[in-house]
Image (cartoon, rainbow, N blue to C red; front, side):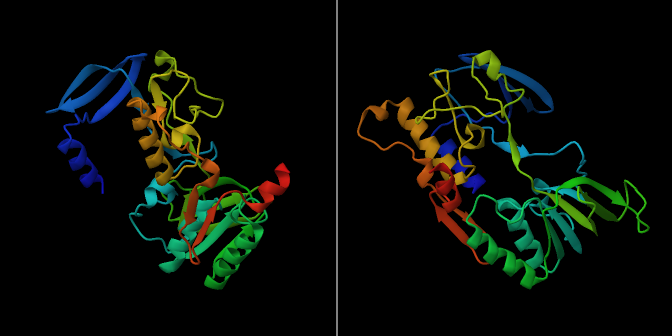
Length: 289
C-alpha cells in the first residue's frame, strides 16, 4: 500500500523529500535529508502546509521497553519472536486486539485491566461479551489492576536486564510473569521538535494541535490532520481530513459541502467477535444528559 501511494504521488509530479523537517517560520521549513551518505539541508518555502506527523506509543517512567522482551505496540508488527507467554498492559482497543492476536496463535496471555471492564468507554454489554470470549480462550484477566513496574528477571526471579522472563507488578500487590510483555496504554502526538512554535502554531496541554472543521490550526494557512489533531485516531478519519484540507486549500469549501462530524464516524475493533460502532456510547449519552 505504501509503495502504491508513493507511485501515485510521483505520477502526479509530487516532489518527495525523505528526511526530517521542522518549521523555521510561518512560511518556511528546513528539511534535512541524506544523499549518498551526505547530510543535506534545504529550506522549503510554502503558501500552505499540512502537519500530519502521527503519534508514538506512550511510555511511562516506570517502564523501559527494550524491543526484545519488553515491547511497545510498534515492536509487535510483527514481533521478532512469537512469545510463549505474554502480558498485555492496557485494555483499550489496541490492547484487546493484541490479546486476540497472541491468543489466536497459541500464546498464553494475561491482560492487565486497570478498570473493571475491558474497552473503557464502550458499552458494558459489549465489553462483557469480549471478556467472556477471552476467558473461554484461556486468557487471564487481572481486573482493577494498574501496572506500576515492568522488568526482566532470570529464571529465579532476580532482576536481570538480559533475563528470559518479564514480571509485571501491579499497584494492588499482584504480579504476573511471562516471557514477554506488551505496553499498550495509549499514544502521544509527535508535535515536539518540529518547529511549530517558530510557525506560530499553538499546541494544547496534551500536545495536540487544535483544528477547526476545515482542519485549520490557529495559523490560517497551516493545517493539521491525523493523530496530532486530537480527533479519532483512525486512518479512515485522517484520510477524510486530508480531503477536507485539499478542498479548503483549493477554495472548494465555499461550495455546498458537509463538515466533518466526528460523532458519526464509524470504528471497528479487530477481535473475535469483531466489534463496530457509530456515534456515542450509551454511558456517554447518559452522563452528558
